[in-house]
Image (tube, rainbow, N blue to C red):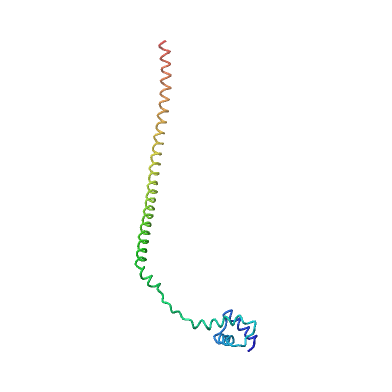
Length: 153
């Protein structure tokens, strides 16, 4: 066997580019006694793969029974979480609706206050006209009163 060919196959094997035939060739090479010293580390890897194929798991898995036993509790917990999320969501939705109503109410109040303000401004203007009239009347009466005083003396 050529060492250069083995080196190229190992590079391809490490990059996961080998075919099944090339991998079988590598397994055969590393299971033999005639191995280059610089490739001894790969022999350990390939012998491990060979021996690990023979290993079988015989232990019984009991995790499924644990899940089946607690399945009722899982469904109860999920139901409680759903109920709580619906309650919280409904509460937040109601708060949102109340804020929306409050904004509408505030808008109506603002319009009503603007109307009241404009009416008060009109009333204020009417009072100004009355004050102008009253000032004119007072000026006339003061002149007459001063005239009356001068006449009486």
